[in-house]
Image (tube, rainbow, N blue to C red):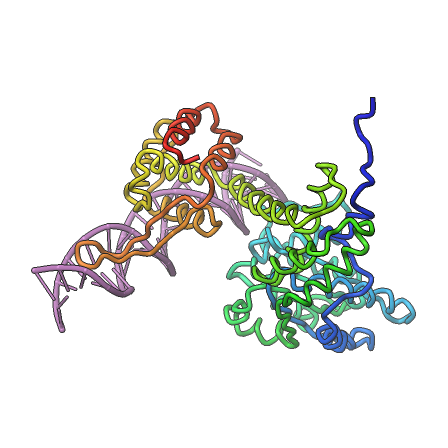
Length: 412
DNA sequence: TATCCACTGGAATATGTGGTCG
DNA sequence: CGACCACATATTCCAGTGGATA
């Protein structure tokens, strides 16, 4: 009996739709590409590279264009004997401080057997190690910091790096930084010293509109899918969904991939509009489950408090903090945890709202009422319960009876 | 128009964990 | 081991907030 069998039905090469795929040519970004190339020109000439700052929403090609250009830059530099170009790409999404970024950089340069740990050293010691590594490599070193805005208020690395040479920390290397951010207000938050060095050259990436997205998706779809497996309205629909949301190509590609995968799993011969719509819901659901899993146990209890309150009295549905806090404290005691203070609980509610798991509405009832938020669960209750059920605290809590009650009340 | 409610949200400070180094 | 280090989470404190109401 064959357990695994390669399905030949839908895809030619689904990797083309994945995040890390590097296309041969880039669509719809000619102007940015031209400008960007000009900014990088000094590198080839062997002079001090300019720091470049890119901003634009997620999935508008910032990272793709950067990787594409740096790839070419490294390759084209090989023809000049007196020039070595090294590029480093670093995504800062879980590097929340300059310290972490420095550690990460040192580790990417070092041998896997010779890594340093994320804590323990004084900040200066890590910088020293970093200068050493950079100096050993020498030549032109371009450091890409994707999602720089994740580095919090401590931006010291952003002015240490470009100045390292003039401060005589290093002598054999010239450093250029390319910062990428999807928060264009980030620039204003920067330390002025950082702002004028990091943002020497700027490039703005606007969102794609529907026709542009459609063009991009069509090019990729042609490579990814077999001929005639896509119904005519599939690509336009993916493009439209992505355009009306954020104008992100990433989103459109994910949608296309998921729709294709859905069709393949069902052994459907073609991908239809219905697959796309279903894929959209599936992706959304995955996103939310993902963010629910990453919460701390108090975060989970907070969510559970909202569920409990909702099931307890659905007529009262948007709840005020105090009511939820009472529920939460009962749950915490029931699971032998010390309940958090009110302020911390408030932070958890705020975080859940940011993630789109709770819906938060500001209210002001004036004298006798005051200003407060009302919270309401914004994901299906059974989804919340099943995700919570898969986590560590299952067993300590009677989620089943909650589910039962919710079912009886018609909430599921 | 001044008041007042029920929080909100910033900031300073504390606690606990996981790490280096001599 | 003890002195130090960075960091995530919490706690404590408190100055706003802003519109319905007296």
